[in-house]
Image 1 (cartoon, rainbow, N blue to C red):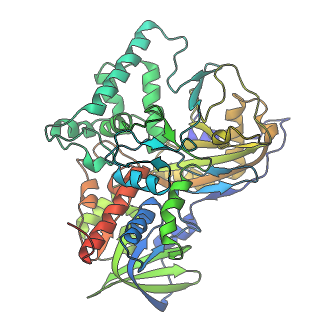
Image 2: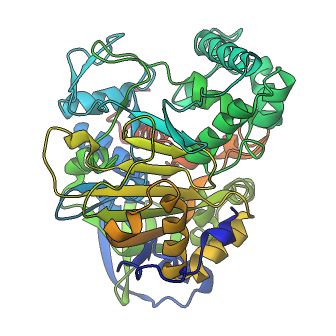
Length: 526
């Protein structure tokens, strides 16, 4: 089912659609950058550090500055609340995610993630331990995942039922190969696939994988089984918003090989999660910026001065000019050329080179759990094999010990089967009712009574949800120019600098930008 087909029409004789809203990132606000016509500044404020963008990278920059004793900073956010792709909603029953909903067990390279988890009392003991112990309330309850295929639910993400010996053998070889890659190192001594990706090997043998699609790597290495290609395609759509034939093989392998974190009290493939997805992580970072976040604030012009940087910000109906000694740009890279007229030409080309995935999330509020098809019991992550959607996560799964009168299913869909521009057009022009019909029609194949039980269905649209890791975009394109950019007063911080949108990458880029600001002010270490 294609992106357009997902938007369906109401079947005859069906109950009316549940109420709901059509939500999403503030595209109208963002389009002001393209259209212009801003009022002249009517007020001037001053701050030491101005952070533009309060997604994970901006919040992480503020977190790092505050922990270093710097409190002279201001954080701007175009949306009505901070958190970016890690925002969440709240129903009378439970909180639920609007975007990112899990965190793999962090590796030692993800030192900042472990530091945050220790600060939040989720990681117990030494954050640098090989196998830390984690608060069991945040370890995903079992069963963690299942897949719906050929009319039955199966435990786990990779289908097993009805496969011949040859396909099972390919699955076994694939898992063995991924285990090998988790431990593989380049000739420079670095892990081939580390997270944050900046710690990965720069051995040309590994970097060459960036030139080909992930689908080609699978075929070239003898992995032709339909279930393996489905798994690869699901993984890249789920994390990157792109099909596996649209994704760099380096990025595709990174998905499987970088996830090598371990815990003393959980299996290595366990994830950390909460009813509200990753919003608890965003709140943990945001605590350090309390009282210093300005929402509904659109930065529309950056101008360098002799001793400061002036940033003009639309807030309400007026423009505020904010003069800062240092600026951290933690918003998506593609916006920077519209805001900074004096942006160096090479950096402008790099900022505009990215390709962003359009994304759709829906939250279905249910009066009760719907009827189940046969097979594996309900899980946290429920994946649909024969579907263009990615399935849904259950917000109440972590509250398994409580008796609740309802639940929320968070459904995910990437519009990878049309061009990004066409996907954004569909998000902008398709009414909520059409999206809702398509989603309910898809889920009714699995849960026949879900329409009757759904009391509310909200749609959330994100036209530029994540930078797509297309072939050649990591080590043979423009990404490195963004990551290596240095300016005496302006630092870049966003997951775009890593090439894909992951919590670990966004936090790392925010922390690194803050460290450069601290170094320039004499409060950091080289």
